[in-house]
Amino acid sequence: MKKRILILNGPNLNLLGERQRDIYGEVTLQDVTHNCEKLADEFGLEVRFEQSNHEGQLIDWIHEARTYAHGIIINPGAYSHTSIAILDALNAFIGVVLEVHVSNIHKRQEFRHKSYVSLRADGMMAGFGVEGYELALRRMASLLV
View: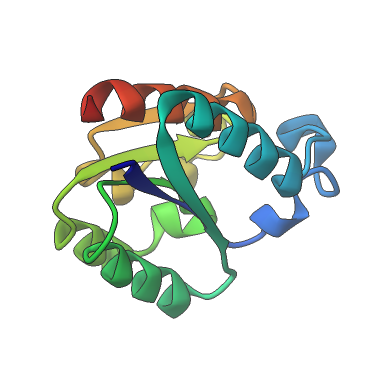
């Protein structure tokens, strides 16, 4: 049976490849999805991708993941710095949680330096560009073996 991973993306990540290319690059979220699906297949993992600009929808997907997923890879976007509700939902998830940020949040504005999600995450990839998703997926695979 394949281990199931939810890869969850927060606000504005639907605009990867279009907005602030100097920070986020030119690769789209569809490209990230395709690359991660290929890599997941190599590791015998099943991935489900979701993206929403709405906090409540992200929380609902985290709640659903409690019933089927072995791990969550989450790029909460700006909700990293504001959402105790997402933290609470992640705290109710029994499984591995890895946090991804395309940019290095510690080199940006001071308000981005704190991530509530990090209080639950088992690891974080930040500043590796979209390759951070693949790094997180590799780490997830090693943790779930």
